[in-house]
Image (cartoon, rainbow, N blue to C red; front, side, top):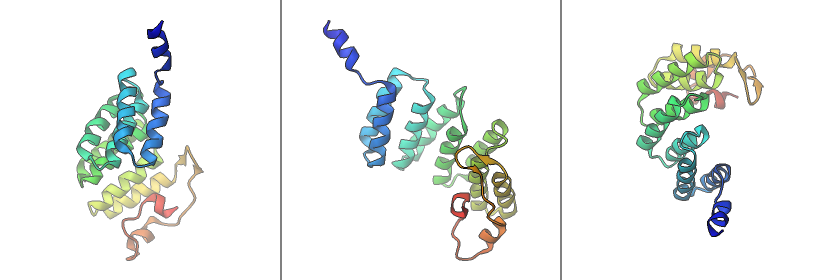
Amino acid sequence: MLALQLFAQAPTVKQLQESAMALMQQGDFTNAMVALEKAKAQEPQNLEVLKNISFCYFLQREFAQAIDAGKIAIEHPNADQQSFQILGMSYKAIADYAAANKVYKRALKKFPDGGVIYSEYGESLLQENKKEEAIAAWEKGISYKSPLIGPLPSIGSPKVLITRPTTPSPTLIEAI
């Protein structure tokens, strides 16, 4: 009977995820990771858990671990755009733009209408001083409907953002 009571009190994966997200927002990454590892122990193939582990490492600036976790997430059969985005951002954080670009290109094969991925890819290309390719990626990304906010507003030409000397490393998010 005691075992049933203990089992009934164990937090669900969803509860652990919610707890981890709240802890991450508070900057308590250590305890967030504890909650995420407990969730992963319950459901090792849960994509949301895998992504959040990678993102938690990213927020801690533990980029090698973020990359390792992100590689697992993008191999998941249901890997989504965010899975690729987190991995690409982790590579960009260590200035491995070639690896980030490989991730983004792979994501775009799977999600050819991935506006957010085009934005991230454009930013990575710009860091490699590939301005024309970056502009093309941004323009293509702008043309796609965002699942969160609908069609992206027209911001004019991304060329204006790149050539303006006071604009540091523009991204689609800054442009909006």
